[in-house]
Length: 353
Image (cartoon, rainbow, N blue to C red):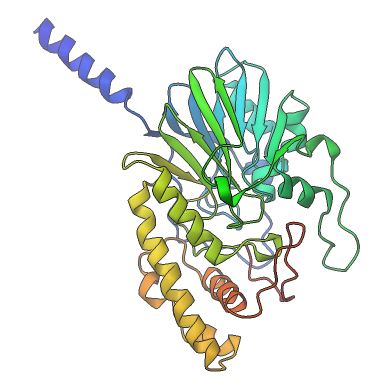
């Protein structure tokens, strides 16, 4: 009997030590918010949602409260911790900085050493200045630094708010097509080797993916998502075709068991990206054909080209679909080049992020 109990305990212990561990899954929806709804930042909690290894955790926000990201508020942040200090990937929204710190201090008292930004959006960089003041040195693509130093004008045409210089990346690197897929920066910390790998313009012109070699994990940020339709931030240099290039690069870099962590949605492996890629190719071809026929954006939107994918796309909304199709429509004709990390895209009322 005692032998059976020992074997049972060993079995349970082995199962508990198996990574990755999903602690809190993102919400599936459907989610709806009344007109005029404002995110109640005081109600949002930041918690450990996944554990990728004994000392590599993922943090994410509450579901059902943030209309920009209802499945889990903000973007994922990652924390590698141990005697060498903390290496952090992204920082969540500015409004929850103290809560993010509190979540980290629930499992580590180590000093902050390194922070890398995967792209410019505020749900990934909003608390940069806060964590720089905790001691972290910020790394990012040079394009991302330039974007931070030149914030876009407000909707009324007035200059954008001056950046908090404490949150501007101090250590930068560039994407080079000749060496794509190779790390620009590598760290050996806390028993892990971490690579910062600059990406081609895809979600934005300043994207970085982060590879944790020993854990066999890659944080692939937002060029892939399985909650809602794709978002290429064209004003900040992103493109749908760049997303295709990014997916193809991941297919070469990742092994069959590599865990890929998107900024939003669920954890995946590289084979899970194939259907996403096929959808991008299909929609690009269909929109190209309709635009070549002289169809207007309104006519293309009315064609409901995403219909074959709606049933299997979590977080599908008309807003998400229309944004995606509008991006493709703009990209397949008269697509302006990236200049200083930006594109001079057509000005339209945005359907949301």
